[in-house]
Structures are given as structure tokens and as C-alpha cells.
Length: 227
Ligand code: SF4
Image (tube, rainbow, N blue to C red; front, side, top):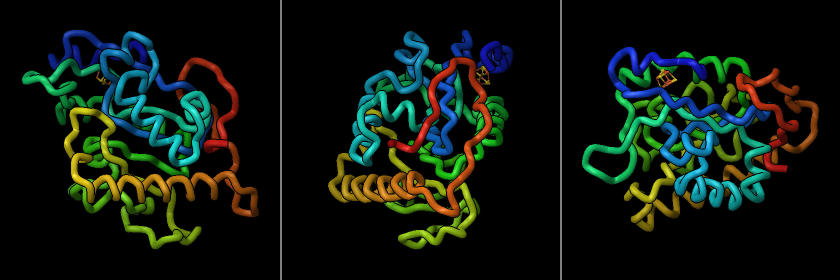
């Protein structure tokens, strides 16, 4: 992945700038849109302003501070390179469908190797990957099973995995959270995320085995969902 230049070769990017996830062997996987300029500079996912907001949300869900959340959740994105700024301001350019298709095998491989039990799909692009064709208002605050069927609450443990929990994009450029009703949906989503993470931590006969080594290069400690 690190040496990939597919989007450069296809004329979509001037230069590739792959940001690798930190290789925590967690079965909780968060999928965002794409790295930003800050992430390229730090070589670390979610290290910009959107990331700070995201870690505040994760703290609200019981993940503790940023360092604890980074140890507990495998953080990745739909595309792995900075797409550049939006042409008319207001944040980063949204990757094209062709870029998403070129990068899809990397996300597919990450999911295949980690076998997540819970996927946090953050923002429209990630939601289009896991739950296409549904507006944010019909997603945030709800959970879905691996077949895309909405989960009852609390979810029955036999529903197919991974369960998908939608979240809006944490970027300040997003206006979705300007509406009070949408902020209530986000609060509900974080409350439910907290309950799901607590259930993942609880030992029991259905406790999942540790996943195999994740697809990245740096080495860190074993991740446990927001312990
Ligand atoms: S976005 Fe993905 S497919 Fe495109 S160059 Fe970067 S790693 Fe390769």
C-alpha cells in the first residue's frame, strides 16, 4: 500500500501520500473518508482538526483520551492518500468514485484480515461503502448488521457481523450538525457506541478471539475496545 501510485498513474493525484493506520489488532475498525494535509505531515491518521473532534466523540462513548482510543480502535479510511483541497474551499476534496474504486482493494484487505466485529463508518463516503443509498438522518443513531439490516436495540448477539455504527463526518466544514435534531442523533449514536464497546469488553462464552496481525508496519500493544 505504501508504494501505491495507482491514482497518480490514472491522473487523479499529483502525488501519492499514503497514510498508514496504526497497527492495533482491534476488532473495532473506524473508517473515515481520506487523510488530510495534517495527517500526511504527521504520518498519523486523524491527527488534524477533524481528528480532535472525532476523539472527543470517542471519549464521550467511553474510549478515554486520544491515546487510549488509538490503542483501542483501528483507524483507517476509504482512500489512503490526501486528495488535496476542495476546489472552492471548505475542506478537502472528496475523492472521486474512480479513486475510491482504485483504493477499495486496500480497505477490503484490511477488513478481511481484521475481521471486525464493529465498524464505525464516519461520514458520507464511508457510509456509501457500507450502507449505500441512505441519508444520514436515517443512519446516525441506528446500528446495522453485516447484511445492512437495522439492528433492534439492544441488538441480538446472533445478528451477522460486523455490525455497522454510522457517524457523521467530524469536519467543521460539515453543516449537518448545525441542526439540533441531528446533534441529538449523534448523542444517541455515541451512547449506543458506548454500550456496544462495553459489551465487546465484557468476557463471556461469545467473546471473540484475537484478530490476526493487522495490515500495517508499526508495532504497538494489543488493542481492547476502549478499556
Ligand atoms: S488513494 Fe489508494 S489507490 Fe490511490 S494512490 Fe493512494 S493508496 Fe493508491
